Length: 401
Image (cartoon, rainbow, N blue to C red; front, side, top):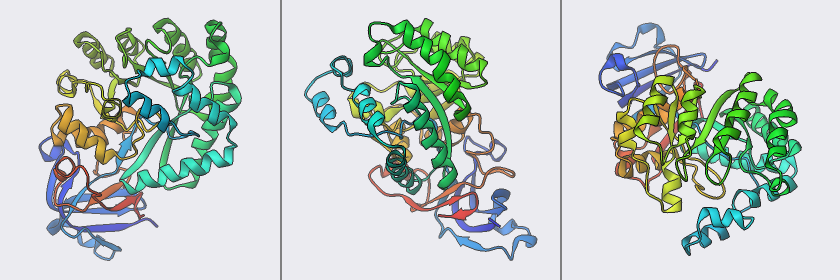
């Protein structure tokens, strides 16, 4: 029975709007967990007597937050692209490296050649590091196979991670990441493959379908066709949208009522307004800008548009080899114009909403009991101390990890 009484919390972030402010802070708080779910939240002096005999966890006067939700990762992969990173530092562009057979295509070659068990072991190590950094739910994309067998292999690895580790893994099919080398002369044939045999094999293993819709990847028309095929198979839809340039992918996301549009470096005010009306979340990825030395998306503009904002690591071997949501929150506050409260909300409640997970990202009665205890008195220390290991403890569904 995963039941626990968390006491001696200095500053408790609940994300409960009924408690005032954006993140609903309770000072000197407590959390009651029964069978892996939050049963009671409030000031410690008000803990009901009926919970007095539960096992206790003393937070030591530290801050407690909901577990982080990372809604955009590519953490199942093989190979190493540190050489490509060095080439970018010398001035080569992402598009130039991709055109020369590097980038995503080099990871595809390595991932195709790696047995499923070996791919699982490497991915599991990343999951454990993410857990140690406070992430308790993670979205995981395929997209480094670009053939039926490897895309299916990657999604089976994602499902195995979910079943075998104390992390909730949300699998996403990304067969339309880029056009593989063997189809460069016949793009239409590859889109046909994705919409047909590949989706037939992968849709039963996934919860969402994503498409990289941008100048170096898939056109808006190709993206529409693939996502409509995915919707017909019952998948939710997400889009890598307008990262490298504005191609109209964010507008397409709104038109299709996509669950999220991610990146959005070149989205316009009109795009954001359409996304808000459609209920499409904006997933921002500041670690990509950091790693690629590119201008950061204007998080302040995105937030003020009224669209739901989420933050993610974009953990991948090439453009954002980052696993820590703490670092992402710090980047969003320091470089994207979000306040610390907004960045924390976006990395918890906003990220959960982008995945249609209404049962987490907040600490209110009935929520999944995922929480992190910081080695700090308040959540403000996350951007204040961006180089620090601030996680003192992680609780997943009521179990202390």
